Length: 71
Image (cartoon, rainbow, N blue to C red; front, side, top):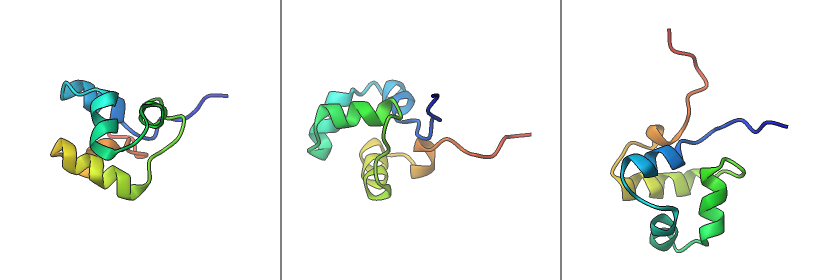
């Protein structure tokens, strides 16, 4: 069964040169939890996505894959 990618967290972390470990420490979360977010196995809450966007200095929309195709 294929899981649909919902978040872009892994991509954004790579773009910014950050690691799962860095994010886990900043959010006081387990590294395994962050890893599961990055693989889209589970999704962070909206509140957590907002926290992540603030830590990375980006709009929260940049962390979510659009469900609309661009023309």
